[in-house]
Image (tube, rainbow, N blue to C red; front, side, top):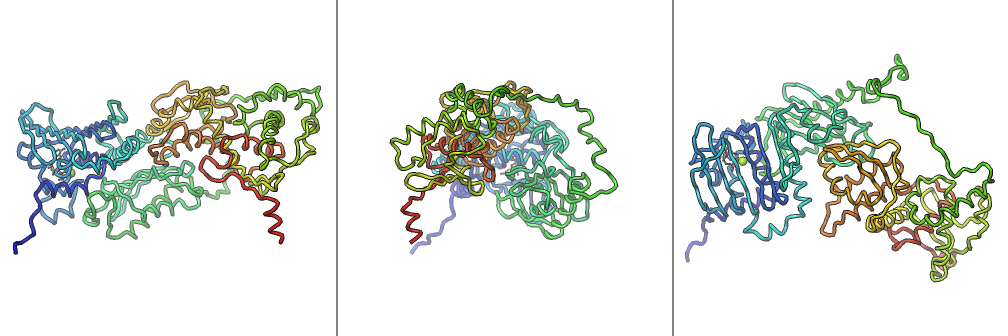
Length: 627
Ligand code: ADP
Ligand code: MG
């Protein structure tokens, strides 16, 4: 019998380790950026191609490596950062395992160029799947450049497992944000497929936050400063009114390392108690400094969790510091009987010019016509257009309702002939148009709990979910406009300026064309602001920013899959924003119009989110219930 245990060859061991360290291109970005920071660089460039699948390169101006070190850096457990186990408790560097470069080199093509400040010439090394292909002397600037190409070239399963470029780029951007936020005194630039996504100079923390999350962030930040023996806190929380539906602006850094801590997050939520709407999350960008002895970061190479010696104390300090800041900046509700708030002008209004009052005119108003005939006469001009203006449902003045309804009435009547199941019991009387609108003579529908519309059918009863039904109607109408590319827009009297973070701007730019097809008109798209001069007919100006924010959050949250279609997502998102909500009272005409529009849809049965829009109950079913 021979012995069967063997030591794994290095390249196999490296490949296995790589599975832990490198999950996706973003992991490579993190490791390379951290190495550059550990090397003392104050200027770091990140260059990626195809979301890191073909290239991740980091160029720094740090201390560089000697010829021997350059070669050794690719060995496993080769590190200059710790010498003994004790050093683990005094860590001032990001890295210490000496695993990253060895792992990356096991599963990609790596080109390293490095030079120390005092050396004339530098070193270039090429290594593929742990095999050194070349090593030579080279001319290169001081610092280090590591280019990682064709990630997972020798592990096809891993490569195929990668998500779309959009998703991978988002992971990389998240990683970049974390590193850039933790080190405001380092200048960073970030390029993807040749275009610059970020370029931030050496700056203070507030400037860094604003550079990354956009100009509008500035006014939202409330400083938090606290210095105790065990914990130093500095940074910002966002004012409660700017809280977000996502957790995308929550950052804890402990000793300049990004960490996630549900426990400490809870401390912040507790400080914000009573100030946030349901389902909204506070924004925070907080740097915690503690003695490295009191934390244990050595849990897992890629994990962002951390263990603190005394979590309870940190919780209490953090909560009270944030609470204090919120109170100081007068954000928490305070009862102050001495001051009458109406007397002081908010500072931000001091220098603002007065707003020009707008005049609204009801053009269809005819003082000589009686109520009944005025709606009748306007119907002839707009009835032909009514199908294309269904999007104006929500904001259309009540007077136009009848006319909108008239156009569809004929439609639903023709439908009636071949669709027995869902035909309405009562014929619409033509005289309705001429009778006084407020007197509902032929009531075929009614609203239940401001949520459902109930109507009678020949065969029984119909119950429509008003919100889902309207989403369906709007969705099909938007989708049609986007695909046939002819939407009507209404011009805004005053252009609307909205500002967004660079990330959000990216999303909007990607959808710009589709947005234009729904009727948006953008006159100016700059780095972080867009000017809107026209909106789709029927979209109230006040809803525009809500629609766009909803859209951004939808794109951010619905991880787009292969069947992702921008047009579809846009139509869905806009339908969601603009649809009649539950709790909204609808008059009879509105109810009927909604039901008719729903059944004029291609797929009336389901909402854009695939939920049923209505249910029916046959007389037989009802009779059975009475048995
Ligand atoms: P670790 O960072 O855990 O030490 P790595 O595999 O990431 O392990 O790097 C190995 C070693 O290579 C580092 O300890 C450092 O000495 C050297 N090194 C890596 N990247 C750089 C860089 N950008 N500049 C200078 N030295 C570097
Ligand atoms: Mg490292």
